[in-house]
Length: 431
Ligand code: PLP
Image 1: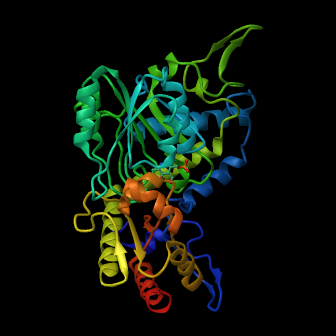
Image 2: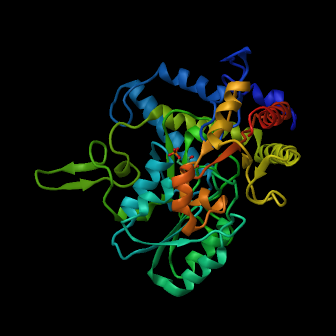
Image 3: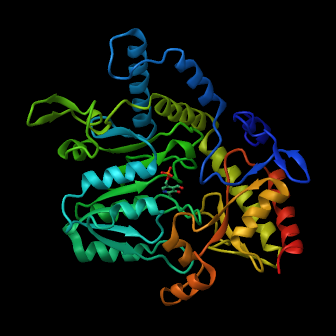
């Protein structure tokens, strides 16, 4: 494929040119700048789902030919994931879950043994990597700096203070609000110093960057990674945990039932090994296959192309917004090397809700507005201090911003339409 040909890339997706109704404009092709929330499916994914459905049968539970075919395909998807993430199967397992939230809940339920276990997390997290840990362990939060980046020195201080008492650090690979990419290798090395382990929320990172569980220097390895299929062009209700086999084998499963046991006696049960033990109930074959096919497509396109396109477009939109005097950009928009294609802004004289609604109403542009399921981080990005928060909320409601998040297929033409529309909103609606 020609590296910069966006038309070729767009052809790989279902529905990008499907028109929607925009009042006063009729039916137009919408613009999706909300890829951090959910992405459109690859054609390749849909084709494979349709093919597979002709052979659909019970997974891991039958001797019929269709059942065997589906069970093999399910295991093929699992093995593909292990290879893709450079996770040797004698050390790591791949467990299919519903999404990142489900996976992080499962990991926290299984790994935490005592309320005294110290777990480090950060103020950059999505609620899905914050709330599952609250109340279960001794949670220590690492602050973010004024520019919204994590303060790695704080992690180092905590590690040196609590040493072996720290069991885990659970941290996002990249922020869903600012797109900052965390230095996972460096953080892994810090946490491994006294035997702690690292859990990475890969919901935003995995779709945009190659992630490897193992590094040349093994102290930089990732121990657990969780991500969602629907954010990587595979919308069939699936996600996965790639994690240390031993940890799952050592602990009882979180969700129990059919498929998790070798033998059930009247008064006790013998668990299977992971991953079966951790996948209660009939597996989601289409979800697993969708992720495998999506990753094959992403590999084929290549992360060089993906990262280059998304970064160029990010810069283009940031530069365009900087020219509009009513627009306020947040986070570090000068050095964007460590950012995914995500940017947040507000318009003076308009609420964030209004901006999101008007972009859709006026030109069929889909963005996300609000606190992005990351309330503690969003208010920090906005610069609202602890002692101002209550007052701010009673006057303005939940602190929020407007977010643009890019995908593989977004184009400069779309960016221009977006910038023109923002300029129009500033003129027409800002008070
Ligand atoms: N973590 C991050 C960083 C996210 O951006 C999201 C979703 O936006 C999640 C976790 C939760 O993902 P899901 O809704 O697929 O469970």
